[in-house]
Image (cartoon, rainbow, N blue to C red):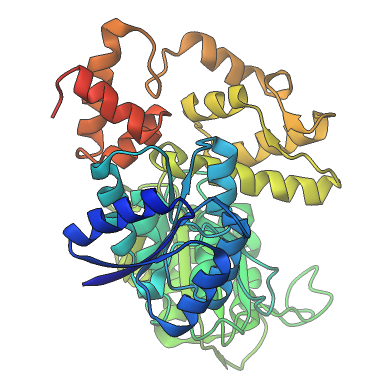
Length: 446
């Protein structure tokens, strides 16, 4: 049986919720304030904390921060009467698993608790984390996200990072493949060693050998000094080759030989250098098709693809959109020395209805530009690019209710899309779970 700490100053409501949870086989301790709850957390192990946002001796989000400092493994669900996007975002930023607005449906409570308890204690979702600094890299800000596709991505990263396996990362341009590669490196046993990133599409084929393996002074015209290649620079750490499909056939042969022998010979040198690297590659191309066409060596493909990870499109991470938007806003504020507080509701609606063909890179660019142009506390629609504004006019939103005629069909379609997960469906529809339950009841949907 799972232990839940319920923090709620409304005595009648807390007793009702406590008895309801006990009937569903949960062990529940009740606290009416933060002071008492802190004492209970020191004495008792809990699987979940369920806390009100407004408490007599403090704020629920401030208490959430305290819990995450001392008990980071415990998922926290916030209860609030103020079901606003800004509140939800602030809670998720600080590590809340989810939030729920009062009054709520009993099924809604059970679903949220069940989802929270499924999270492994060793892999608690924290939307914004700052990884440690690795040699040769800057700090990596990694938004883990809460969507199903993000959870799968995070699980794969945690699984493969401690191994020595070569990883092939696929995904559309702008999805953050290099960030995933850096995160794998930082979670690996090589995390304090160099991480060397190379854009294979930017290397002219004539100097690729020199770039990868280095050269000696005077070995060819223009070689005025000794040069250390990327393999040697990454020795002991991780070499990340982005857009590996752009390598010429000759370069592929050289790369394969270096990987097989774990030795490189700089141009103009007679001595081989032993290298110990972990290789991570990325591509937005279909390498298997390139293999079939004879443009990419099959033996090299299998050498690179000991483990593959597909980074999802932003449109497939809809639940993460607000978290990413807030993350990029914080980043833009730092870079531009601004202090924009957030986004208007109209902007958030446009963000959620836009298809984001450029993925996270496009979202980041849009927010940085909007931050620069904004002279008030909140980013509004007039500072957004034309393509987002036109999207609003031409796109009958699939993520909100428009007319009574298509409302029922829209609910059914979204529920099918998320396998009847009402929490996810409500988020996709941009409404509260309570509203969704009421509309399902009105349309006699089971």
